[in-house]
Image (cartoon, rainbow, N blue to C red):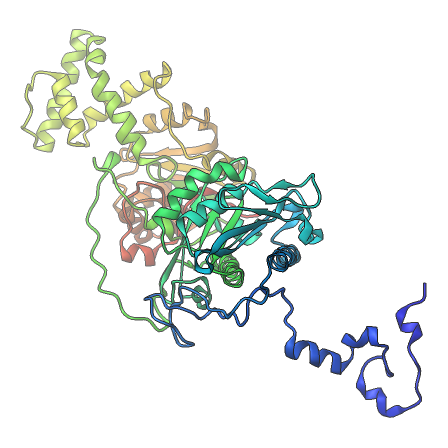
Length: 588
């Protein structure tokens, strides 16, 4: 075969050398490679297959008024008349456009391994004709797709024109396309990809419980529709299933719940985005992907994409944040807490390289606060009568006197029957009284419950692998809790992940070291360990404890943020780094 370049006519006219890299004339078939050819192409020929004239992202504003180049929010795009008028020409153009889009998405790494898809519909009531729905097939390499591979359907999902290749299958996303059309009647184009940026954005919350991803104060927020730069963009997140069609129930729920959303993230999977034209869908999808990547990179830097910058950027000042109310739960109280706002904000400290002593709280750190409130306390109240009956008369008498002493010390008088151990215990548990006699009795009851299998200690799933990492890197882990040392060992010795006690070097409680909210207690712990307080990393959900530890000279006080923890005050958010998972302490 002869290379096209080998047939170029050579010329001795040096004046032509400046016209291009070929240093000579080009044959007509190579015209696009000449300077004049490129000028003609780029001056009037668009690169994408066009369905209508003059599309622009700027159409109608979020308030329903016509928008302009200065509008903060844009809700719809604008375009001119259709380019193709006959049905066959329209179908050919849409099919070709879908193939072109899929190739583009593949080249950007959004549709690898046959993943992803595009759906475009044309026609509809505004054009006084039925909708024609064109859908990319499933299981085909998107970079190699052609228009003849595309399905044409009607709005009842009936195949109107099948692909020329009879073995093609419809996308498993097809039911979701129609759900979006149902809840977003103006939508004409939908894009689904497995973008790595979208997938990672769904994992910014290590607990994987978040229902949405929030982003604000990024310029590209304007590109997704309905939002201005300083609005808070909220993209719903649903959980993945084995196939896309199984997402339908979750999908329909979030479409109704988030009326401004132009995208839905699927955890550990990807994203769906849409628009009122293929151009708008593509523009908004690209803006979303940019924002997802920004969010992931910002978190690496310790910057939270969902937080309004506290300084260094223009903004309208909000009202002064109200002071947080004191909320109590678990060993420290009795109420349930909604701290969802705290779960959307954290910095990610790594255990300092030379740190060899890690001190952990239990409630709100290794273990859910609700475990104490909803499991341990009810177990005592429910089984106290049977426990008392198992004691000898003399043991009952000793216990009763001990509990009465607790009542006197706590100034509690509202007991129905002061001679009844059961009545006293149930009242003290209900009032969340911290007293030595009660704690001793609770410890004995819990010990029996753990040993007979009625109780299993709750620990978060990140604890066992974190403990293994600490052990393999020579980090000694110690426990400091208001619960007794015996209760601590029972919980970890009979945890839902088995016996974890071998991973802990030392246990401390209020009887061995002092009140957790007083600085000298942490000095006592450091002295017992034979190290300077500055060498200790302390993790707790309690601001008061962290402040006391900081006052005592603890080197690294860190706030643990778990579902149900007491809400963090504004001062606490500024003063202490926060983690969602103990694995965030583990380095490479």
